[in-house]
Length: 353
Image 1 (cartoon, rainbow, N blue to C red):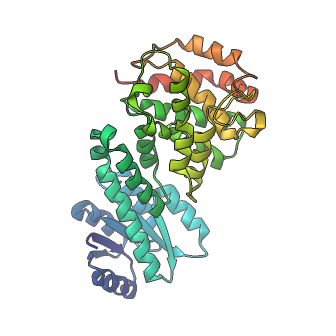
Image 2 (image 1 turned 60 degrees about the horizontal axis):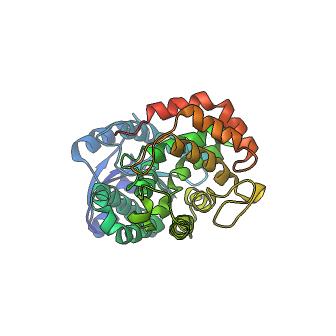
Image 3 (image 1 turned 90 degrees about the horizontal axis):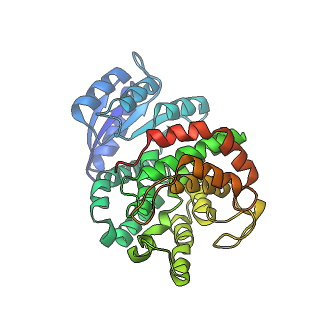
């Protein structure tokens, strides 16, 4: 495997030990002995990955990580933080600074190589994203399989990666991709208003943009039909929930696990008349109930080739009217309470058409 790695550690023995291993695996290695030096070298040398110790003089690894992740020229370089296993607080601080991975001391070289390979594969994927979208219709099944393989190998996903995957499902009938961003932000606002824990709120923001990933398996003649679907066509359309579940299944990542539930359940209705399983009330996962309202509001107020957009007031009244039949009354209550905030999000992320 080829690539350039910046190894940052103030202890000479650690530098030489890890450098020798990385060189033996075919990497080009440059090193730094403190965070400030690491920031300078990362900016000048553009490494493919950074291995960053925490405890160093002049500038520690957490501060260096924070600076690198805020710099547009270095923010996409994966950073693996090296820390003592017992120092959970350092891991939290490093994660908040933007670290992509962690490895504990003493370093297990086999584990180190695996983590490096995973991050470099994810970095390679990010470079392919633009190409991935240019010929989506003809390549979607092939690309999705490749994407699933990468996601399997690398479970710690960035928000941008998930957002782009969500856009794949919406690409043909939502060319700007703003819909998935809005649904993510709406869902975050509603979950927060319900009083759910921060972990749930953060996760649903990341997971909800994947709600319609299954649409990649629906033919254009149905997905983009400018008239009402026939009963047979609607049966095909309903399968996007099942396809989405299959695409997202099997992951141990909490974001993808929640996304699987959302993709499968966001068209269920509170009274049991939804699809694909006709679940009702609390049988429907809470995340699915939240995204159902978020998705419905955005769909009603968005223009597509096959439908006009409705006013905010119309969509608001429609959701309010269907509380207790289509939608969870508690979710609707919070939607009403936070409606001004939701409208602002809609205005800030308008479709570019």
